Amino acid sequence: MRKPVIAGNWKMYKHPAEAAGFLHDLAPLVDASSQVDIVVCPPFVDVAAAVDAARGTNIAIGAQDLFWLKEGAYTGEVSAPMLVAAGCGWVIIGHSERRQYFGETDDSVFKKTVAALDAGLTPIVCVGERLEEREAGMTENVLATQFAGGLSGLTPEQFAHVVIAYEPVWAIGTGRTATPEMAGQAHHFLREQIAVRFGDDASQTTRILYGGSVKPDNIKGLMAQEDLDGALVGGASLDPVSFAAIVNF
Ligand code: 13P
Picture 1 (tube, rainbow, N blue to C red):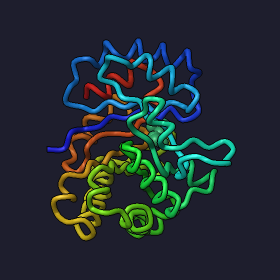
Picture 2: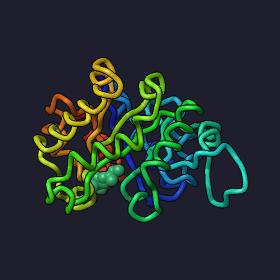
Picture 3: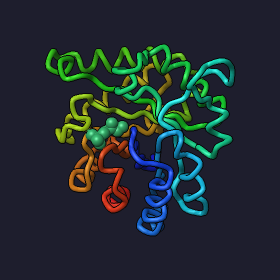
Picture 4: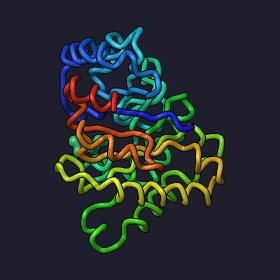
């Protein structure tokens, strides 16, 4: 059995005080849901306040990115051991916005994933096609390339701790969700890639989340897909009531 994960990606929203307020509001709304891993990923500057506010709850805190070296002269960067020391247990890697605006590549995704695993963080590694790629019938080629470049170089022991998020870029922030069937197909294809590289067991145990305009009213239909193990939620994770409704799907 794969334990579902509902993770919120706040992107560049909320100040530290707002993060603390959000967690105080969210905690009582989700305290009965022990069957789901609940993760909130605020901006770096909010991590300390979020970790503090989430102490004693069933909510874990994650970051939205990291740099793959432990320390050094890398102005503006944050390392995996720093995130662990700050209280993070999770980290999003390779989000399409980082690929689009900040030069993230499959190679950097791989290095960051290794760094996260070395430090004991659970990486949520994002893959997904752009609209023109889907329209050109290239979805599976894109997913195969991102999987090969970002994940297939891991050892089976490392891969066992990875969570994958399938986020079709055209569904992010657009209100245009993939249908449950479209998501299910992509998740199934990713499981096949995992089976080829890491074996059937890994293929059956790896958690694959869907992301892209997930809302309280579409989470149930998505979760009914056999190969779908949870969600990476953007916009709807900014409000404690709507995020709780997704957690309690
Ligand atoms: P939205 O839920 O706002 O579409 O964002 C999805 C996303 O990018 C989560 O990482």
